[in-house]
Image (tube, one colour):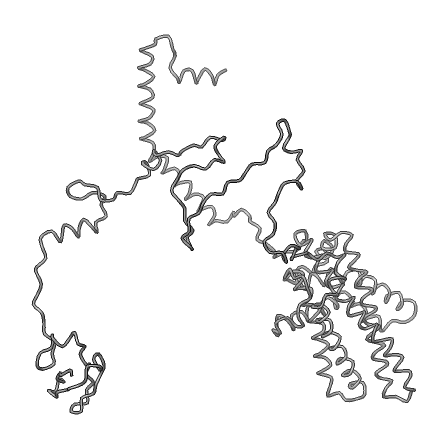
Length: 471
């Protein structure tokens, strides 16, 4: 049993297994620490710990030893070295051991090396050099005949990071991951066509849903170009990427539609013009719009600033991409025609389902429009992917601003003050070293004078230097 007292003189008697715990005094309601078995011998009758007698006084050598241990000087009061580390001069005077070229591949004796993780001894592996017939040129040996270690992992024998090229986009679009993404796009078009039919039937409450689905489809194509072009992706991004409103929906939607507006805005005035003038304006606007649309779309989505949409920079973008730009133009012309044709035929067929026409007309329209729409979705992904690869391959040639930092020499007042301050510091450093240089020149003159006295016929060094300059 453990017997101890509270501060209010109440006596506790607890078993030994409660040593080190806490107990509340029933008299004063104060929590008391139960002493451990080692503390019982140090307790007085009132439960107060005994104060041990003071230890021996510190000796006279405590202060000198502490001063020697914590001083910043390199020597103590007796002149003995405290800092035993090698100085820079000692390190440089030690030199290095030069290994002859013939012994470069030989194993030199030295301290054993151990693996830092396992602690195992690292032993050198003897490599038998290949015997080359005497007189044979090493450069004439075929590279394929040189033995190379085989892969330890057999499933990694192929290249896991094959780059997509414009010629292989079609094959990559047929991969399961990309087909799964395009399946979601096709399902979104099915919902889009159904909602469009409801709006055309006069139920305008579905118009916001129609606009939302159309905006999401446009944003998906914008995200595709951004992810493959600047994101360096090798497959189609998942629909709406991270579903961020501004980064993945609003910004791609606005930039894609802004490119369409910049290229085809003259068509607004064509509605009021009829006859040959209207037809000529229509054809001209379509041709010029289709020609500039890939470059403008690339600029709005990937340039990072609308300042790069200036006409001269757009023309410079087309010039930087070279003949490959025409492939992108024809791709958007073909895919846009097929895409819009499929949407129009499907909309016509679904609308006829609510009319008085025979059932065969909508069925024929759906049979023609559905494959056309699916092919249009496939080709539109191809056109966007090809445009992203054009940006990736020519981004260092594009005449865009705000793309990288261009260092230019400063000519403002602050730069001139900094240059003057550095020149003054160099001048002060030269003046500080002037006594050393004068002393060195005096030593050289004294050495030359002693040499002249030893050999009277030889001219001083400064005279020889002057004659050399005159010659």
